[in-house]
Image (tube, rainbow, N blue to C red; front, side):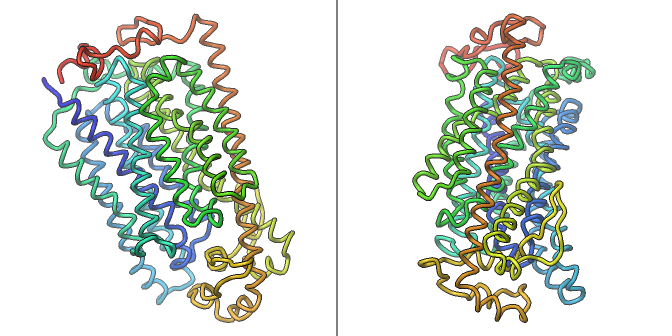
Length: 530
């Protein structure tokens, strides 16, 4: 049976483009949600976390389903549910308006649930995509898995570039062109979803490892390997650092850049370019060595980004350094799973992806947001106690072992989103026009805006930097883990690629076997009939 290998690769690439667009636009929606729904940092972090939780659960169980039912069915199911997630976004505002009239105390909590479940369904679709496309590409390109998986995963930063530029142009008060309703911006990924859905509908897909082997139980054999269990833990940390920081990058860089989504676009562009060069790099340095070096660079990059940089140029220099650290981590980990545990097919890759996404959704997203909020509140209370008393919520927030008075989301957004000239706000309209700030407090806030706005913005910036510094401990821990794996593989004779028939070969000899036309791997039983 013939398979259109190039078309399946492109369709798989586009699933990640769609996911990246949805991710980037959602990270830019925080300001709109604060203004329209009074959704604060903790709630925003929870919504971002939901965008990974379903991913983590489904990429693992999806891997099992893929081995049982095949690639195409799950890919088309994900396409339908992705469109459902987009449709839910358009319900948020009319439902919120209705709830404000009937039960205003619960309106914010209820609309939070709508946004949360929309993000959750979106993430389930992402999980199904990854459960399908990672083993599919590894099967289509068996002799150069790490290289082609890196190319495949260039689709994610490509989507973030498109989504980030779209957000910069059309989302928020600082939009370059015109501010569109956030629902239309966040649902823009649907265009790509429809496109690749039409593309794959008539195509035939190869059998999975589980279908072709006839022994479904063998796909779970990876879980009896201690090095694989170590990889699962390390991939959880990779997810925490890479996607956790990406989730918050836009908000953490507010007040430093005219349009903070640009930092996410820039780092995504670097990742997109670098992932096309992973093959030559990994041929010179084995995958575990590449992961070890990348972790060290990422750690130093986060420390640099968390330092008190004032120059926009130096912010982008630090971001460049950090991008070199994070670019290869995720796809190279999947390549290791494919090379060391080929008999486990999509289950091994799904287990790694699940660890990364669950860690982001349940730990990194909310924890980074909490750390930023804690550091910001403590800084403001210390440096400007009067301002803190006016902007802090009366209730104590308890999260991740912290107890603190968070800043009111509506007040924070008004102060943080106002341009300062000579340390003074150009206008206090953000306070007077904020529907979610109590009218009784507006006069006092306007009166003290000349001192309060700068104090709030300085504290916000400090909190973001501290959150990045605290996150740098994660890649430091990763480096220790990868160093341990380097020592382990050295002790057993070096890193080897394991074939489906159980034979082993050195990584250099197993990689880069190009076809005669130079377009891909040599023909093999798994890849020749395309």
